[in-house]
Amino acid sequence: MAVGRGSWVGALGGLAKACHPGPTVAVTALVTALAVAAGRDVTDSVLVAAAILTGQLSVGWCNDAVDAGRDIAAGRAEKPIVGGQVGVRTVYVSAFSALVVCVPLSFACGLLAGAVHLIAVAGAWAYNLRLKSTLFSWTPYVVGFGSLPVFVVTGLPGRPWPAWWVVVAAAALGLGAHLANVLPDIGQDVAVGVRGWPQRLGASRVRALIPVPLLAASALLVFAPPGPPGAVAWAGLAAVTAFGLAGTALGGLSPKIPFAAAIACAAVDVGLLLASGTGVGA
Image (cartoon, rainbow, N blue to C red; front, side):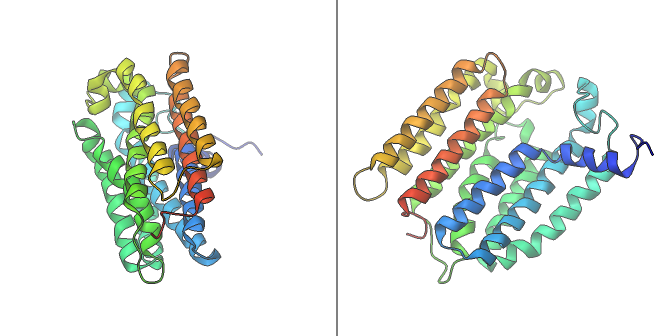
């Protein structure tokens, strides 16, 4: 039997696309790896993954639901709501449902940790609802990413605190992620009146700026821990430099390349934490 576009199968496919699956999976995987590096056991790491996943799903669906009108005006047929794969009401209901589930999952990771994570999720919702069109569009990304190591570590016994350089490095990654995430849509955003910080800078300046916070984050992870950097740290810094510069150089071919490069840089930085075993919980 043929499955129509309006069927539940089509709606599930539309929801899968509307949740921004790339960033959702990447952030969930990276934070889960950070939880393992921090010393959380299997059960706690699964809880961290579930809390992050539901939070990211809620944010992704909220983003597409809120932007539906602008996406229709811009003719963005690749968006599942615009393409008719799923209705805006369904996406809104899914966003709020994921948010509701995220609350107990976050607190299951620890009361303080849960509060930190939910503040980050609230900031991401504020971005979707208002801040993305303001000069402070970068704030939820910096606060959200910077809070992730705090969320992971404060749920450990004794509520330890991550080293300052881990938090600052994560915040810098958030700034780079914001720039890279917005770059592909700057032209369409400006056309429909979205005037966040990257849109005001312009595509060429954003493309050139993306590597700066990513390299700063990596430099902190290499040089801030006690002791001289090892071979793995130098290799990681070289890899991030290569990814960052490649993202800038190839950004003219496709604006999605810098975002992919930013995710690669974040993955290398998590690898540096895993290899060093310092900083988290320090």
